[in-house]
Image (cartoon, rainbow over all chains, first blue to last red):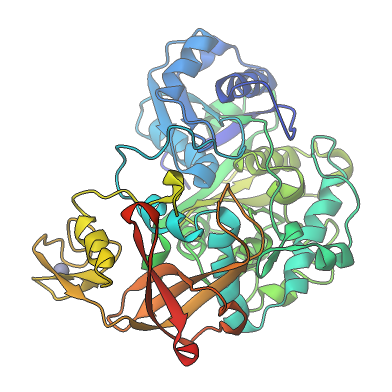
Length: 385
Length: 136
Ligand SMILES: [Zn+2]
């Protein structure tokens, strides 16, 4: 269990769309208010605020700004800038801050999604992080390219096929069709995947997530307080994080990822095994990432992810439903916060026609730095503490 | 390469690398304390955290560790497609993200031997690229 037993007691999600006129702060604000109301709390109950810095629209001092706009003066604020790793990292930091006694009711709000970057005015006075100077000049910085290099390693090591990647895309699309708040709801077959155009081989168009706008938020508090609140409490049973590289030159392998270390820690903290998990909401910027994460979490053996995702095993009704909201691949790229809100919704049994029957446990993954940084959450609707 | 958004910008960590490339040489850092090579350049060694280092000329030989042929301009990339992105493991043991020079992308395979082919571009920018050694 975590230091102080904690639970997620509120969730909020804005409309997900391909374009929005709202700023990321406005979107975050809408999601935040929705989450506070969902929890049956008032703004003044919030004494901690954590925000996710988006790459698409970075905002200095985002958490003080969001607090100001909510009209609150929290005891703890923090901005997390781990791009796709941020959603679960926000929850981890909320639990850490509560366990340290810094605050007791924490709002975690995402930014406005992953719209394409505007590079105007970019590129001066920066540090040499690796990305700008050692990826950009070679046309390697775009996410489909940099992740494709990892997908290629997996195919090389284990004979994984493009059709197996396609099975992930098809599963996410089926789930998105059951989610009114998803941008890609048109039916998709494996043939559609296979006939979609190559972007950066081995990735085809339908291996890639859908850029979108929108935001999400969750409220974290102590498990004890959670029992008195409006919603069925969803406790944080385990948290694990791992950072093994930041840029590709330092990757020892790409057929495995930081998910392995993160999941090991999270399962150990939760006292659970993969066999006891009812669903997985896995960060899915590209299809192959889901397959690698499933292996690294121990849902199947290393190298068997390709076979595991076939035959409907990761679809609703299958052995381990994955991304029941449609994921970044079909709901749209909100930076991963919707993986957290969906897990909570499922564990409250509020997911309507896409509900995983009798769901008790879920894993959520968030990641960044390609496959180099991973945060894993294990959530449950049972009392674990 | 003439698009400033995609050109590397020199700083004290990296100026020796880019200057070497303008002379057609790929320089990498070698830690004076533990002899580890490193790339991209950094102020301290990731193995032992010492800062003392020398710049040594890489042999320019290596093998392809991973590859992707890019068929569409992504993220505003201004050059022509298709082009090939590779991660090369240099003989010295470090990895470098790069491209294969034009015309060789059909034959790229993991493990294929490659050799340095520095590209002199616009605005004094020279980039370390590679060609398949067999296609030499
Ligand atoms: Zn050293």
